Length: 210
Image 1 (tube, rainbow, N blue to C red):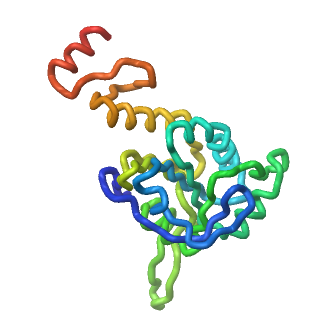
Image 2: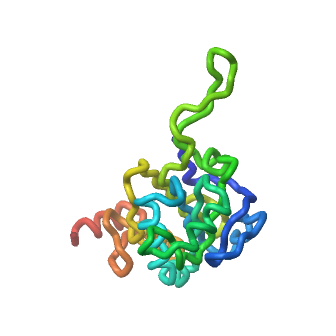
């Protein structure tokens, strides 16, 4: 598994569904560079069970991400038509109606590959025929990208394990706190709590009071 933290987030241009209904071509991350942070998250499949709980959970917290100048973008290996169809289904029917942030169609699986979250792999068999091992869908990857387009945090869960959206918000808060104040955030830090300076004296002072 590649570690992208500290590196430029892999760019892409792909079809996506935005605002829950509009299919757009050539959706890119570049449009946010220099303007906004991005939480880019991958999920395995449309029309499944764990995935809609995550998508709705991000939507429920979308205003909190927006208040922090964060764009939320979802990606899966399904087509934009599949995304659109799922968006027309109500939540009580297992759909994701009401999701307004972009859902990108990684139909060629290149985005998932470049972020190294693609489950399974291609190989050539004994007859020199292209084959695949495992199901070529995305793991539950999440990447926090700063305004310069650099990955500052990544998390990858196996397919059955849903993510904690509040933890994604906490990481945004920690990054922005560090950028604004230059103080580092210790274990279990939350917005409003004390941080520490990145020096021996600062760490010693923090530990002495906790």
